[in-house]
Image (cartoon, rainbow, N blue to C red; front, side, top):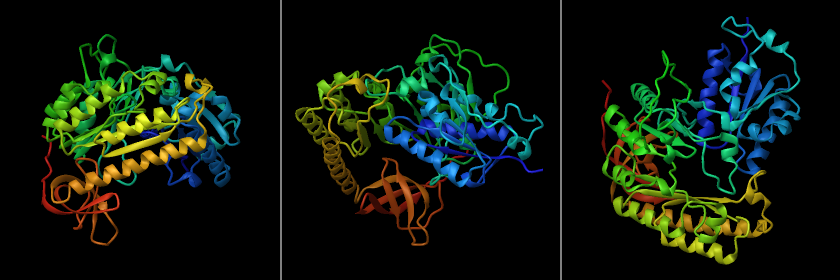
Length: 478
């Protein structure tokens, strides 16, 4: 008897990718099989993003594409777009279910609710299900589950899994829709994080990236409230006990270092106000933590930051970045920067440009403002013309490229650590990622997932070309 197959397509940030990994677990546990692609799946899950209008457009285009190439499949749309505008998505041809983030942890259950519970899903029974769209969306601020499963990037699936340890956000930046589609900040308990990391180490992974929507807030919700239910790739036996104590991100990092044999921990984006002196010192002092600080800036103009409802001023930000650079002279330091925020004048943009020129960034993620329905900034009257915003975006990208090139050249003749990703297809090179977040092309062919010491020899485009000085043996957990 043929069993129904599913395929999950993820859009957007690392948090969405992590949710997609947990969704896959749901469907597998309910007896469905993983399809090779959308064209041979009976259920296609589109796990959407809504951070920009472009993200919404991409999701709608994917729905139309799936419907065109596989008209007989059932489409389940979930994620942030589904939470924000479920009725809009439900009107699209081919959509069978719209499941918001509020019920994403039940997506597989919803899709198979009336099917047989015999351990597998017969294809014939799936085909008999009603075709009218079903919308399942609730109050996101009542949502307490945190979906947690490691993410393995398609290009680097044998290295560097990403583990989401925090979700949601309690900030209310005037441009951002994320709190309204992901809910309140909530943390994966330390005990569960350690279990996940140990499992990854035992499986042979040598670097793990921890991430979250607002990672620097990890643990704050665990101080005074009972344990949130957690959906994980690991099933826990028995009930969880509340973890009620003062917990901060630094406590989690120290626990990972002391209670696991993970060789390298990489920390993803942390807001400026959460880069405490303790966190900076911890990252700088431990050889097991990647020398990499991603610190969102958004704007270098005090007036713009105030309109954005950001919780720091440009001089606060400058002080943090200089402190990070002083502690780690060769660390990667990156930022998110937004151009074209409503009312951004030429003078305000110049303040952002000057601050970026002054600071020791090694890369930037530059975004053009996109109005999001329901946010205060979307109602602002002074929207920046698209052409002006594009020009500002281009200016900052040119500055970022120049800064990255300078950083790359500074590593020529120096040694640094790198983890191998995969060979470059028979040309004798191996692609790698350095400890300080640079692409590297090694002049030897080496298996993936190996930590090596590399001497920089040249710069080619946006990559460091280097030779291997030595390799590190894997540390096996006991």
